[in-house]
Length: 187
Image (tube, rainbow, N blue to C red; front, side):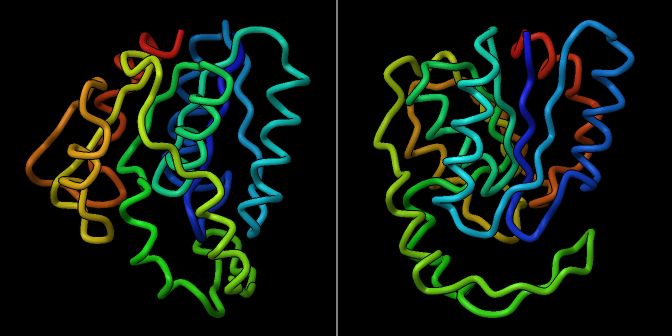
C-alpha cells in the first residue's frame, strides 16, 4: 500500500501536517508514503500526480489538505481510490479563489511565485459533482476554518463520511489526535 500526501496552496512537503503524518507513518514502518512538492499550475499538478499514481500500480490512498484535498478528490474519483480530505477546497469554493491571482510567497520555503489567471481557470477542469463511491472518502472538517466555508463542503459531498468539529482553523487544529483514524481508513 502506498499513501500519497498532497499539501495545500502556498504550502510544501515541509508543512506541519505533512511532517506530522510522515513521522506517524514512519513509526508504523509498513507503508510507503509519497509527499511530492506540487507545482503552481493545477494542470501540471494533476499530470504529476497521475504519473505517480500510474507508476505505483499497487494500491494507493490519498490524503490532501485544502487545495491538496481538492486535487485528492478529483484523483480519488478518477481512479476510484480512498481519500482523506482535510478542510478541502470544493468546487463551490472556486469562484472565491479568484483573489489568489497574483504574487505569493510559500509559507515553508520562502519561494516567490505568481499564480496566474490561467492557473485559476485550470482549477475548473478538475471539479467533480459527486463521488461514485462516497464511502471511500473521509472528510475532516473544522467549521472554525477562517479561509474556507466548510459548511459548503458538507452540502457539496452529502453521503460521504465526515468528522466535523465546530471550532478549529484552516490548519486543522489537533491534527495528530486523528492520525490513527486517518491511517486506519487509508489502509
